[in-house]
Each structure stands twice: as structure tokens, then as C-alpha cells.
Amino acid sequence: MKSKKVFFSIVVPCYNVQDTLKETIESILKQDFNNYEIVAVDDGSFDKTSQILNNYKIKNNIKVITQSNKGLGAARNTGIKASYGNYICLLDADDLWVPNKLTQVYEITKNKKYSLISNDEIILGNKYLFYLRNNPPRSLSNLLISGNTLSPSAMTIKKEIFDKVGLFKEGKKFLGVEDWDFWIRVIDSGEKIKHLPEPLGIYRRDIQNMSKSKEFTTRIIDIHRNNSRYFHSKGIISTADIKNWETFLLLSNFINHPLKKNLISISEHLIKGSFRYLLTYSFIKIFFRLIFRKIQGIVLTLFKYKRLKCIAKELL
Image (cartoon, rainbow, N blue to C red):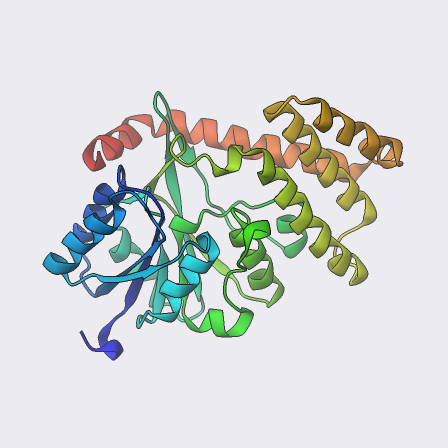
């Protein structure tokens, strides 16, 4: 396929995903929009991932790149660099798309005003499903204070954006948070994200356990601290915003991992003077914003439950 004719490049980073990879690729092959290429990056897998990819490569002309294990950000970057499409679609190898995902996104791209497009998803666990609203942040401060609200598998990005803001950060300290770092750079550059309020994919929560790891919150705090210093100097966020969001992250980490060292981290944080910020407008704003997002998801799940269940049943 000639590069100038490819509209979407679908980048699929793969690491030991033999149990889910077939379903993910099949959900791409069932798309009713066919002007796309699949760029799968095997990031040093040692299970049957490579064998599955090679089988699809022969039958469906999928581009497969094999590299030593470098992490999720590096795998995405390898795929992006090897892509020819006007737009890059990110899809993790345990997520799924509905058959008309690309068609609906393509209609949005006709409006040249938007270089990034997000869509909603269905969070699917072993015994539950939940409507995930991938609503773009209203501002940079909103993204910094409330955390990441965008799922990579629900994002379509014009390729030239990577030339403008750079690729995903690589290395262990960015593992699982490289996407949040990228969205911060995107919003800081002045780019707007168009939201498509339709559940066009499935995010399998119980399979993707990276966010439950003990190191994950530490990485989030590091990203937040590094960016907060810079944006605080520009007057975009306040000291109260920084202290309150870090307190929230530490509390969340203790709830998920009730260890003595995590309790000590919270205590030390509050003793250093952060406690007085908990009674400010900033803390109330953060708290209610997170509560509203949760309630919104519950309401959407209740109203659309039958439809979400049908979609999940069709894809799985």
C-alpha cells in the first residue's frame, strides 16, 4: 500500500499478550472503514505473541516490528515512526474496537479544526462493565489538577502533532504515565481535542493491572511534581493545587496499598504543612470534580447498560 493513500495507522504495542491479541486484531480487521494499516510492535515478548503476529502478518499484510523490551512508550514510538498514515490511532493489545469506530472518527477528521479526537469506552471487568467518559480536559490546569482522563486506545492523533510536541517519553519512570505526560504537552501547545461521545471500544480493566502496581502512584507523583514546578512558575496552577493533588494521590495510594510506608508518606506530607490546604477552595474543587466524574459514569452506565452489554457480547 502506498504511503500517501493510508489514512489511519493503527499502532498496537505488544508485550506478552497471547491471551488477548487475536481479539484485538480481529476487532481491527472487522472495521467497515478499510483505508488503514496496522503497525504491531512486539516489545520483547517471550510468550506466543510473536507467533500470533506472524500468522496475521502473512494473511493480512500487517506490518510487524520486533524489538527488545523497552517499555510501552518506546513501543508506541517505534510504531509511530514506522507509520505512513495521516492519523495515528493508538490501540493497546488487550483493548477492542466496535466495527464502525474508524468510520465515525473519519467523519470528525473532515473538520480540519481538530487534530486530536477522543471517544468514550466501555470498561469491562470479570463481573462488571462501566461507561468510561474520555472527556478532554477543559484547560491545562484541569489536566494537571484532576489527572489523566484520556485513554490511549480511545485517541486518534494527527501525525504532525508528534513533530510539534514530541513522542511519548521512554524509560521505567514513565511506564504507565507516558500518556499523561504526552497529553500535558499537547494541551500546553494549544491543541484542542474533539470529543466523540460514543462508546467505540472496550477497555479490559482486570487484564490491565499496571495502574494497580505499587510503583504506579509514585510515577504519577513524579510526573505531577516535575510539571507542577514549571507551570506554577507560569502562574497556571497554585501552590494549593499542587499540595492538594499530591495529598489526594498519596491517600489513593494508601487505600490501594495499605502499607506502613505509604501511611508514613501521607503523615510526612501533612506534617510539612500540606494539611492547611485541605480546607481551601482548591481541595473542594478537586474533590467534587472527581466525585462528579464518578457519578456521571454511574448514570451513563445505568441508562446505556443494555446497549453496553450488547456491544461487549458482540465483541467477545
